Image 1 (tube, rainbow over the protein chains, first blue to last red):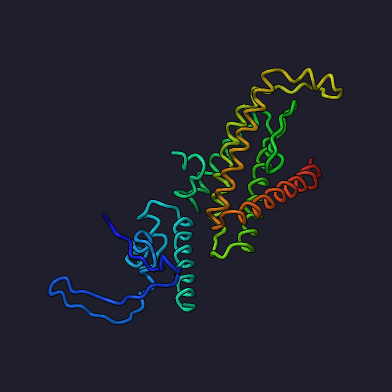
Image 2 (cartoon, chains in turn purple, green):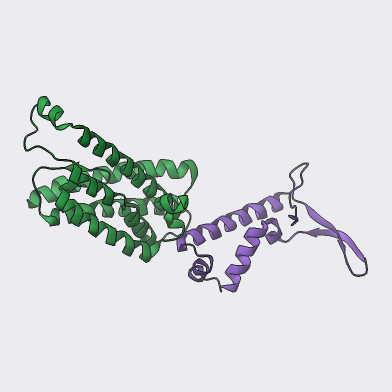
Length: 95
Length: 190
């Protein structure tokens, strides 16, 4: 089962922060208060889209060919991700 | 499969859809010339008794497509936040008009009498075959409108209520503008 990294508090809807990191090898724990990277607030599908976009050197035409979609469809997907990132950044700044 | 019927623009847009769309439009022009079907308005379909020159049929197709592409591109520039391209709007709008090909074929089943002056003439012309063909015309026209909406939504990146309102306004304006062009330009040339 693939788990999704939560970034919004289920109780009060504030942006979550990272408090503890663990090394799986030696069980060392690092505690503190870290902000989550903005990209972590995206879904796995959206993160894959961004990775493919970077691998395609930021070319929407190559992305469209790879995904078998039309140019405006890929541009719309990218615009939706940009909009989501902007909203998440604004929410993070507010909280 | 449903997406290919109602929203093929997810997969095809730009110059590819423009070429496909215009191939179908030109085929529609030829068929409509023989079936005496006219598309003198972005949403209109009419059948006539008298044959018109083929350039009239071609002009109708060009004006219908031009009005839809031009007006929806303008709407996209005003209402969309995305960097839209004219080739996408023009291409998807050309492809969205493909249900007009079956409408032109259905036109062979509609025979319009030479005189339609009195109410009796009109009632006589309404045979079961004409009524059936007219219903089919409406179905294909509704399908074309649905395709136009999806073409607009994909090419201009507008969704939901905003897209519906802008599209409704745009298609009404396209219908009015195309009608004005037909009456002012085409009629003066004849």
